[in-house]
Image 1 (cartoon, rainbow, N blue to C red):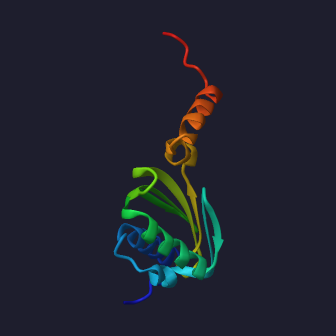
Image 2 (tube, rainbow, N blue to C red):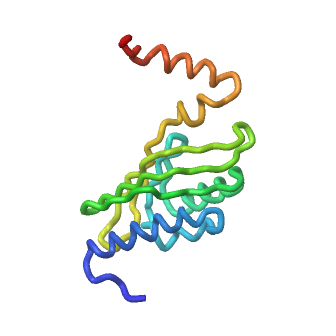
Length: 154
């Protein structure tokens, strides 16, 4: 397979390959992302702030071990310069919650070779995880409601 001839084309191909990696869950191998990322790749989500290929492999392995029937669906993607944006849904089953579904956005930073240098997830852990935990969830939902704006009567 030939390498795209411009940095923009390589970044576009890199973003496509990154999306394809996640949409192949659970068939991926943890080391499957190695060729797609820089050596010092950074991955951030509400639970993690990791750096390096080994840490990313550990995260993928942990996800595959702890989430049954994991599935990513990419619904939208865009690229502007070195920044890719991905809107996605992640679903799976985890022991404490049962079926788990998250809709989120990711910032994906790409270098001129098309490798991912940073992947930063944006999703609401309060709503999608903590708020669903037995016991703690009720408290979090009440706190969220108290902090919100009450809609005026019509």
